[in-house]
Image (tube, rainbow, N blue to C red; front, side):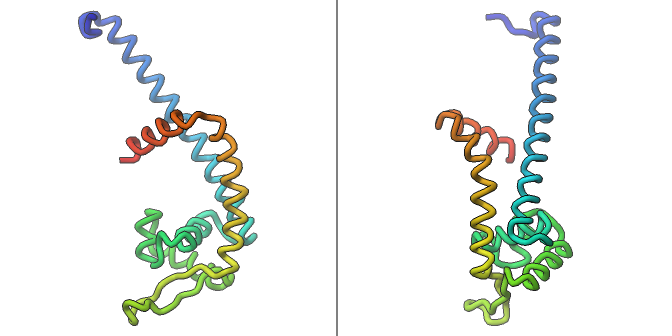
Length: 156
């Protein structure tokens, strides 16, 4: 088998095809991210009409147990401290999050989702994940595993 670099015209065509494929992937990722943002907006409104998408992400980080402090939320969501503080205050005012003493460090506070938050997040997730899940369930398990591997590699 010959090397495309042996034939400059073939190498140019291969490069053009690769550039077009990269452009298409970037376009499709943009469309997917837009749909995800719409889903977050709808999920936030399901939890509370005044909740913003970032507030929903903060709440789900707390409710899932993946982040229970402002610092952990900032790291998880890659956002700034003032935005997280603002959303945590709103979540507390809406009765969705409580700040409690950390049993391991009595000086520290932990953020905990209330029962109301757990209930509303479960409803919002069911609606949101149902839409994406329904689409993904039309794929084979092998395709899903391959897709997950590619996403993982892209995110590194």
